[in-house]
Length: 288
Image 1 (cartoon, rainbow, N blue to C red):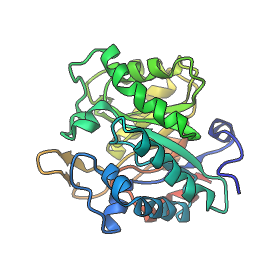
Image 2 (image 1 turned 30 degrees about the vertical axis):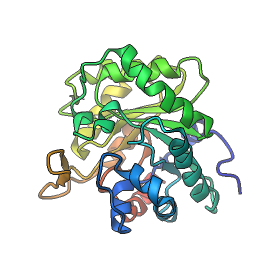
Image 3 (image 1 turned 180 degrees about the horizontal axis):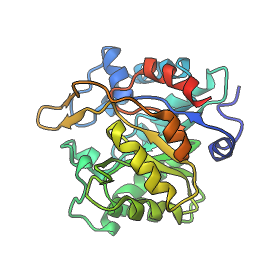
Image 4 (image 1 turned 45 degrees about the horizontal axis):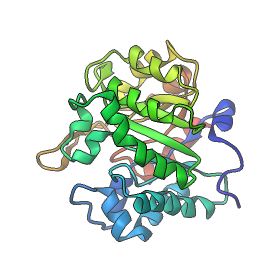
């Protein structure tokens, strides 16, 4: 069957849609080596069949949107195109409608030093736009259903991403990584979400790769400045340690008040790092 029979924006206008979970943890569970600066991009380059298998695991768990393995890929057009093609293969094999979201990770992700959780790289908006433009162009040329502008740590990078998208006719969601009621760079969330509210290319806004306890305040801040559908895909509350290249897990997992997220306006819900297919399968019925 076709990968998807209609735009994701139309589905979000009708109902909640289930996102996939963390690609890195699923690839690790499949025995893949994610060491080095490219992270999941290394597996995409060396063992693309494993990436397709990871996507398929999430399809089987009920995911309706697959996020590509392009998060930490630079401006290599062939590899960016491959990320969309591999996710598309898993989507087309599904027995239901599945969308492909091409991941546009932040500048800090390519530094592989954890700076996507800090932002404020010392670059201008124009310089950041220059960095993102070829990546976004290559991903759009591959034909995804939507772009996932994700794990954005600050307003300046959001401005750069939206500058690149302006006038393209592309569709995207924009999600910040947040902590303590602010962006990772410390900016007010209402200010951050207001940027996306004014961008016609953005079909949904929200948060990803944050502690679950930070989701609801962020969604409420977003709802105060935009009527667009909201997005939530937190991690399990772990904190990334760039020095050791590992996650420091919380003593106990925080509960996910999904019903409250839904009441705040969340329509696109899933998981990020360390959230696997089992958690996505359990999440699905809560969105019905």
